Image (cartoon, rainbow, N blue to C red):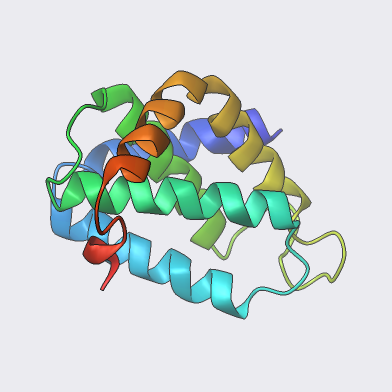
Amino acid sequence: MPQRALELARLAARRIVRRKTRVIRLSKHAYAKLERSRGMPARAAQDLRTLVRLARAWAFREYRRVPWRTVTYVVAAILYFINPIDLVPDMLIGIGFVDDAAVIHTVIQSLHSDLMAFRDWENRQTDPVAYLA
């Protein structure tokens, strides 16, 4: 079921990535929801932060060595996370983020090499989070 939901989010993401300001705004919403979210598995939250950093670095044109497909799936995972209409409502403590974590895990696994390249790039930056301000 998360695969179908991810596919729907990917279709919406294709429209969003055409305007970098939308990607930036989406990233801000994701960070805000992450700060409010209690009960999300730590690994999923860490992976989501990586996806948001990648999306923001791409939108700010700081990191461009990423395929269009990857950007689309990254934005789709972020969209799924912030979407209030979920397979499992996030307000259900303990299980509310299970579907979000499944979608994030699926994206992380399918984009593993691109995400490793991004993390390597991030580690080489002198100020790796300057674009988050």
